[in-house]
Length: 134
Image 1: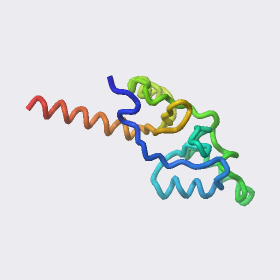
Image 2 (image 1 turned 30 degrees about the vertical axis):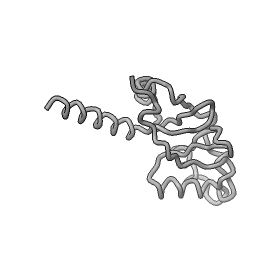
Image 3 (image 1 turned 135 degrees about the vertical axis):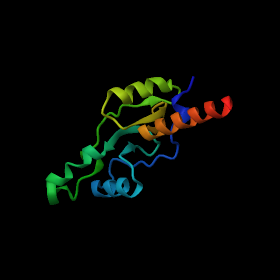
């Protein structure tokens, strides 16, 4: 049975809660990602910042200049342990509006699974099945 750790991305771009909000948005845009986990120095997961959380900046104008990620992030973040069955993670992504979910080990961020990771895994599994039949 596949587990979350089997397909999670381990090189996770994350920020601290005191990161300026506009800097966090820039990181998301430049890296083509739709969300950022928010962590402490020891990688304890505090929350997550999504594109939808950030879009509020459009309405706030200049008063948002001095705000940080802590002002906008969703906390606590829904997350799964790295040993969780991948089927449970997929069920969650299918039934909710989230496009990514942080993966933890004892509360510390160790990876992230985005919808794209699941799709990539499907293609890899199907390719292996196809190759083994021929």
